[in-house]
Length: 248
Ligand code: DX5
Ligand code: ZN
Image 1 (cartoon, rainbow, N blue to C red):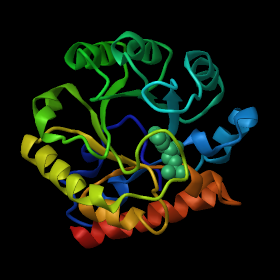
Image 2: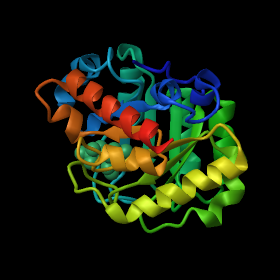
Image 3: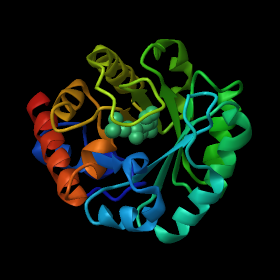
Image 4: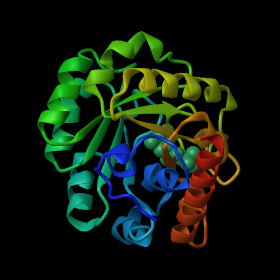
């Protein structure tokens, strides 16, 4: 079952985790196009459009991370062809300069890195003003607590569960306690903030992430490395829903 992307999960699902129904409603899956065939992006987007909630688009500049991927022109083209909303993850230097443009181009969610932003309040507000959800991402070694004052400015908190830059890396278990702490922080704050995990999310690891409190799951190689990407999304969702329900 797919959540309608863009609608706050808990508004649809009621109070957090009272049971299985709410767990089903709050789990969201975002396949990462980084592991897709870049020469067939529209087809690859289509392959998961009936199963996933979002399309995760990894923008890398070769500076903030040691890899170079796609930028605004490709996002604009995807926006015209993809049926799922775009969740743009900006792994770039100077996101203050570039991020609002992704929201203006029609991305429904734009995430900047805490390590890269010089003026996060202004940038997050500009993302929202342009009509997108605003996300703030943290590398595995970056603590979230120092940024707790920014919670009112964000719609999603992204915890990297690998060092950013490449798909197909092994999941870092050391981030699990941070997922728990971030969930506690969000619950104490009380706002409608999604908790996304990105990196090494697979059939083997998604349950641990859900149990720790994540509710939005990016998966690249686990989806596009599978012979049936839509089936892989469904399996990941089922595992996350079961782990979320068991943890409630
Ligand atoms: C890595 C990217 C991820 C990547 C995840 O820096 O942010 O979105 O696509 O790929 P997997 O799921 O293969 O680890
Ligand atoms: Zn990503």
